[in-house]
Length: 141
Image (cartoon, rainbow, N blue to C red; front, side, top):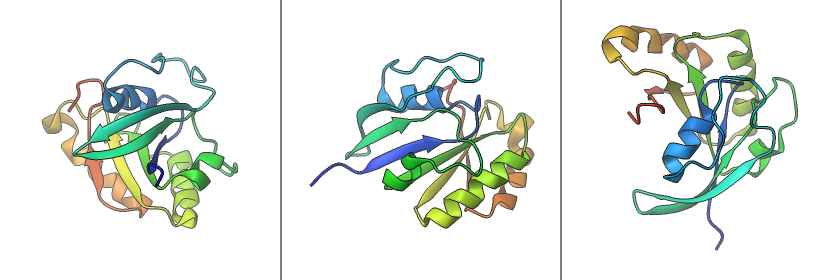
């Protein structure tokens, strides 16, 4: 049996590659504040909570595009940015993910201070894809 595929998707510069590196346990993906640095999919074999899976880092997903990563993934981590808030392209990506029928984990990234950003997480319920999970990939929280 092959390992499940977990894909990290989201718009550019929300922290996909940072989260990928944290979950992979090493720096594999290049992390920069410049959109478009990750262009190709990057893969890593991972183990977390005694589960083995293949993790996929993607470039920023474009709304209304046909992204093959969504089709091949068994689980999707949809990452958004609490500091930028909910934007239209997040909603469009959420629509794509709902249509895929795949299980989605909504990760609200850059929540390095729950006191400062805790209330901002609630707006992501508007995406309608489940409970938002507050994370800070850069701080490993």
